[in-house]
Length: 485
Ligand SMILES: [Zn+2]
Image 1: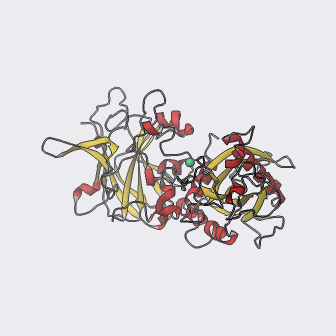
Image 2: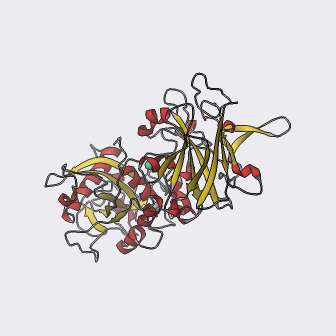
Image 3: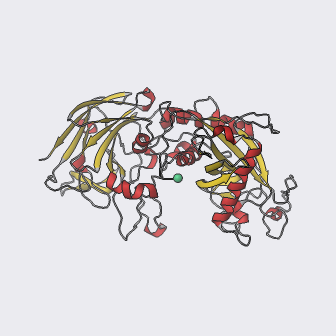
């Protein structure tokens, strides 16, 4: 899907707790004395795996009005523009719930076992599982009523589905090295060896009434053996994918080629590693580039130099300042990020947060955003490219010093020696905490300072100075000055 869905009203979400019951007997055959009954390919119960989640707990975690649910997360992050609410269950089920969560069992093995059968691959096993699970949802939901634009399709903004697969999620649970089995079949729990990796799947399922359902999120029901239950971080990330959000971490970089210090947005975007903030309990917001694409924050353009006022997300007036440069493809973004609400654990330093500066390069994004590689450290044509969405932290990048040890400028990569480096700009007793100069920062691949590429006639001394005039708070003024000498 090459489209961001800008929806201005909440969307119903169905959570499906899915068990795998290859024998179709509806009974759990796990026997601690004979755990191989579920893992021996010749057993009739091979690939059997039952959910162990309590549906009420799942409901609370996703939809509860407790300030910490998935619903609360989206309400906060989007300034009340968008959230997920529990879908109504139209046909009775055997749970004491009439909305939000259903529990089903499909008559075939878990996809990590199914893939080992003749004629199946990783991909086709995962797709069959998701397809058949969604198809079964028709027993509970009248999908016709959700085709709000009458196009014969129910898209994930009209009705969202997330499958919580019995067992652990591979993105947060590693295999048990002492248990000899291939990856994804080796979770450290004999009751649930098989794992899925959290994804968003763009497949189509046709209902009996001919309605086409598209795009579903798919995760394990448990985060880790020591942290049962799925925290909301990964589901929130996968559901954002359903709406068109793209990953902001280094995808498609072979491990031997990975540059661990590549300056991706990390915890400053839920589409990077922000979904794991505080163990996934309080995922951080999306990066400002994508919040603008979704229309969840107001853009304000700083065409003229001068003083502008920024408002935080929780102020309800969240705006993002867009600062043009002489290169029409490149601009800077300024936003307030405070360590409060879902972003309480945004960084490890002791500040309250402050202004964060980003550099955007639309020439890169045009090429790589929809391929989920706009910030990747891979080498698509034998070469790394600059990031299309690059955070410019006040501190935390490697420093280039002169012979006397004085700071000259930043290098292209993170300096990961200080986990408490402070990325925010704000007014304080130290005047240095208030000032951002673009000439101190370079593109990760081009090593070009201020701009990745200078149009003809533009001096390479071009500089954007952002001076923050206030201490960290819900409302902060910034003074914008662009110079060329
Ligand atoms: Zn992702």
